[in-house]
Length: 387
Ligand code: UD1
Image (cartoon, rainbow, N blue to C red):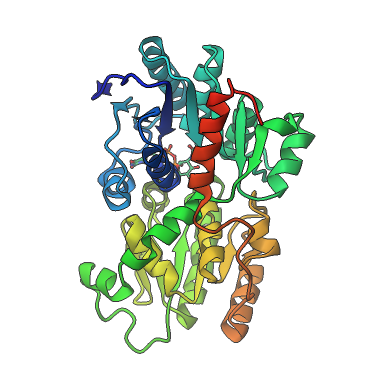
């Protein structure tokens, strides 16, 4: 464990926690909005080290201008229990020395729940950004993390109105909930101009000619255990992608888990075709550049469902559910599950019509983090009471 900075004297202090890739783009604008508040609030960043590779970690900090973590718990990979337990043990020793006014967690990864649980047991109030999302699928590790984190949070920021209903149904007091919009979309707005072009990405990969003679491209991302940990499921998914690639070349940034599974199940030869380009995990600005100009994204990611809606790009979700229903009701997202025929039908429809028009959801305006920082300061000054 590395500690780079002791807490600074300030009337109020917040420990912000990140652990894995999807946390980084959520925390970036929140850190920026706190910095804009000035010296009333001492804000420190804890990285649990759940993700540690350059591709999954360092390049995000750099691209998004996130300050270097003040504390790194360096937990690394492991089973869910090992990972969660290690974060808890190490975070407890941080809280034994630091006495923040509150701990702020984002999203739904193992680090989110682990740090929230340690904080609440030590009597430190918990703030959860991106609360209230529910897939109603308890087989998803993230769903367990969401439900439990929300139960023990004192202040809950939601991205869409469905979150309020979900939280109220689970007995969360209404005065703890704030509808502020989506910090992921703040990050998207801040960075859209800096997005790396597709031609640059292809050039960096030494594959300048990949799209020559084609009218656009599709993107695939897949990393959910339910999609990639079973050989039959993964093979069937890749077969569907091969069919799609005959119509539209597919760019496939491969998550480390998926990469390992493709190797383990002996499926790497399947993707050895000229119309599928496998790449290492993309940096944020590269992924943004790819998504901005694609004709369609096929994904099992939660964040990408939101980003495609914000960009007005068609998204086919390779899951049977979504915890982000607004992306389907108002955005460009269609839930396909893993049924090959269904995926291909939706794909054909998108090729024919360009997909759903969609509209930008309420408060996805690039200012969610400013609203969050203001609400938190007010809440701290009111002695953790709501207005
Ligand atoms: C985690 C999150 C998931 C999120 C995803 C984004 C949980 C429960 N899941 O899943 O919600 O969508 O991150 O990536 O917290 N690995 C590396 N390098 C790294 C990190 C991981 O190679 O920097 C490999 C390890 O072999 C590891 C595997 O990837 O076993 C999975 O990593 P892990 O953090 O357990 O979960 P993710 O599948 O990444």
